Image (cartoon, rainbow, N blue to C red; front, side, top):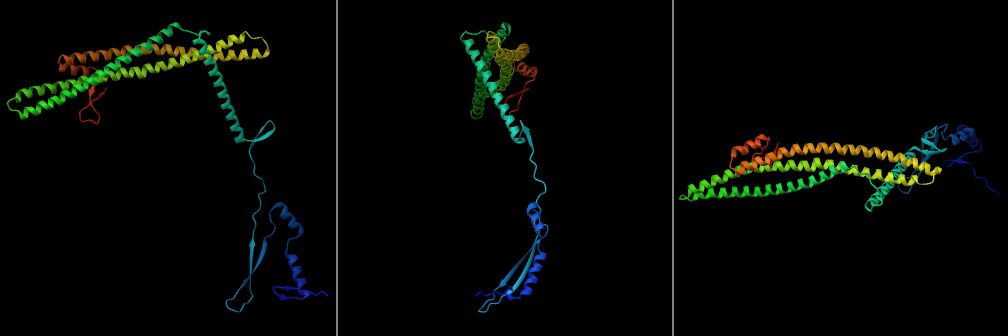
Length: 359
């Protein structure tokens, strides 16, 4: 025999009629089948879902009671976006490629192209340089300009020797001045302690102090001379020689493409060789324009450098001669007049830096 299980709600027995009424109310309150289907497909609910929870409390001690605490909460689910996100892309040969990927690809291709051109150019120049040193290739020579460049290099070497010797003279003379200053202080101390030789020590002390004053003036003129010669060598001449270096590099590139074009002109006249010959002619013309421009720049700089060198050295040599002559002849007024003539001022002894020149 099968036993029937009576319907109950929250533990309270219900008869069949009451159970059917409750079931019917639940079906009427719930969503229809079409609404449920739309909710699943679109992702946006048509109605709010009501959740009912039962809370059961437990009493302390030996007795337990089933206190029912109904609690309802309404959850509104957010609606799904009606349009999907749009990804910007570019069409490349019918394929959609992201914009950032396309930019990176173009940048990488440009860098590879630059490395390729640099490698080819370096190979051609190295080959041309070795061929020239071995006597197997000719080189473009501007005899007049090459002679001027060689004169400049020889002049720089000689001026560097003058600068080295003048610095050595200034350093040694500075030590002499320091020794004279120390000797004058020693004479002054002995003049105060020795009454019988006070006049003699005083005379020598004054003489050494006068030599120190004149020596500092001469040392200032020497420092001004060495500073000006150093500027002429390290700034003006080096700048011109840097342009000469760029000129020689462009000459090597021009000769490399010239020799390459000469070899290519002896190749068979097919379509591939004709295209390669035209490309070499175009590159040769570009390097020729660069070579001609740098050659003109070198000629102009050599001209201005020679004029500036004569002007600067005329002034500095006159200063050096007048200062040395006035010092060793003991003409203090002439020595001071020389510094005023060339606008040379010595810093005061109490300045932060030692006695250097400022113009």
